[in-house]
Image (cartoon, rainbow, N blue to C red; front, side, top):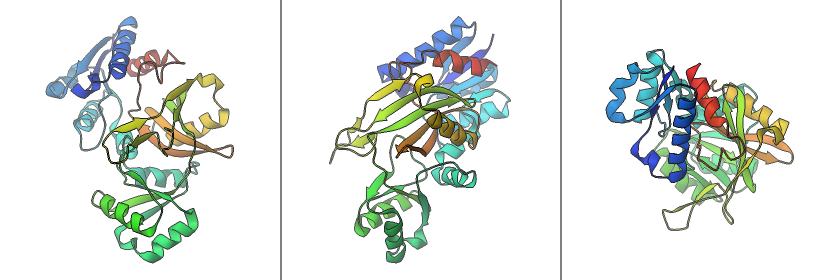
Length: 292
């Protein structure tokens, strides 16, 4: 019997779809004869009592989840997500540099530092990528710190705001599509495949209503992983191979029949009735991975 701790925060239970998925993990663990307990931040001193740790709270090197991951890793426990994966996935600059080094197909990207925020460099980027471009701060999650700029004025405005968060930004070619592919990968194997549809009139899966804090999310359309294009899965696996061997969600755009990686995310969303709607065994596979 493996004792599995699932690190969560209170907000993980605020969405019924996520809460249902968490309960599905518990049921899968118990059916396989394992112990599965939810671990909250006030109980992290109990980590040594477990054999493995599964993190479902939002990961970030500055959050409690990272401390949990690092602690479990140093104790020799099986941990998902491991601290190295969190670090690489949190810093998109590092991640895109790895994509370039290992020839992972990805959206055309250049890096911009504070000293380069001038007319000549902005003009060069617009000549190379066209207008608009997408500007990203390195530490992004749930589509935050990702904005478009269609002129030098908006480029400077966005960049100056983002430079308060980071010394280096990523600037990418704007690549509009009706949906982004999301490929779930675990231990270098495809776990699930779905399409994250772009809301009508928007340009990314999670987009804010103008002038309001509300975020609109597009539909999630799941496919059986066996029916997904081979090339798509190959690109997803290659992208994950430069990050690690854990649990990832790879965002990919299909452009003229080619597949280019947007980013690799650790701690990917798993909501009951969404990512799991075609491949119901994802809970069992993750639990088995944690109990190996």
